[in-house]
Length: 314
Image: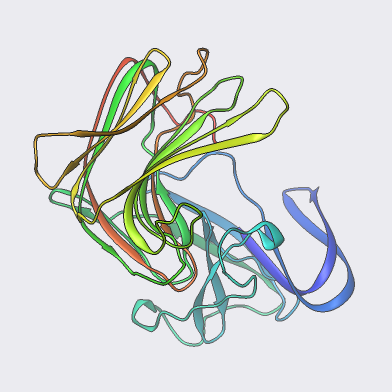
């Protein structure tokens, strides 16, 4: 659940009976402050969230949200707001961003919001299931979105995802695309992502082009985050992304289209104590004025141990 005010505030959530109350102290005006209240469990497909909120126009309002996508309820309809990280945000999204998607509007106008009364709201999630995959579409200013299968793996593994109909909006100096992302439960905080994307500005000379990139991050003994990446030029719009682990060695492999043959993009060494305990993620990335569309077709997981359930979030 998301709320916003055009002011600077010091806010606290407190509980009064069955209600949650957000108190704030106003200071500098005309700055956008985003406030997100979320439950620690993810919503599943065909899941539903219900809540009551007190509405006072221009003063009190709670908007529903799915991940970073917030649905701004106003009298003239529903607007889309993409939640940012303010000064730490990695995209170009404005904290005051609003998008009107006219073709997606449903229901009466104006919205039947009851002034100075408690209103009831229900938010239901459905996923468009294709005959051979799940279609994901991220338009402008939508930032990040991920599908998170309810499994984790331990020990040696082989994880493969197949995709098709990848469409990336090539915007100069913007990075847009898809990835298979893994988080390891290790002392060094290993995590990695295997990306098929359009790469904006870089320091490696391969700027503004389509590529594969296997990125590995871990923390050194001094607590510093160490990043290593291997880029390879690639323009295919369908294929299979694969990450395999044998002992401490991670291998990133890629097969174009429906080819049965893989090529090894790179290998990396990870911490000996790391198992993949955080959920596996299928990521879509579209910052700023970019967009990306893809159909995830098939996911194959082989491992020494496969655990069902959401696991710890990262």
